[in-house]
Length: 277
Image (tube, rainbow, N blue to C red; front, side, top):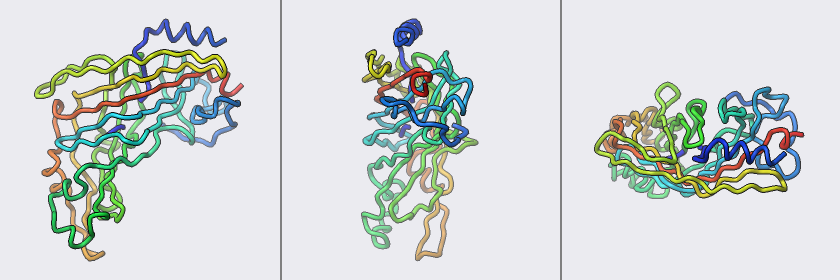
């Protein structure tokens, strides 16, 4: 799950392109972006931050995240938007930015997550559809031109709320920490090294936006914590904690070398002075 916005181009390339163009403390946006820059509305304006110089917007368009023995495809686009300083560091976002909360369907549903096939008799198959939503569990950091560090927690949800409202893998105190790269990983066994892909650079002149397309971030050297807050409520009033059951069925907690994240991404950058003239 998945839950990103960096590149693998030399810093000089980005700097030259910018020159040629001549979370988590949300706040109300002071003004709207200039025409043509509406996609950067999550970037803090001058009134909101004195340090932001470059507005960024990243789309995670595909890939997957495997935690323990559960693998969830990324089928719906996730957007991360905000702003960074001139060195692509110190990520910040206003109330319109951060990471969008997008539900991804988990294969196998609640039955695969718990192994409790008798739940069908109580809820039916549609109510046992399972979704995973990646949420920020801290501020993205370590921005570089080949990767980024993103702390995440994954919210497990169903249409019927059969798992309760607070079933998570990871938390602010114990996040899933993805050290994403477009290069090659060095995971502990049993995982093998995998490689990402450097995005393709395009400079758009009107409006003036740097676009990096069709890149791939990867990480398969991270650990995944166990589930928490998962509660099965029977007959509407009998709550039963099933954290242990979810963990045993999903292979959680899962040590580094047993998990994997792959994110297909596009990234856009624009000078804040152009976004908010």
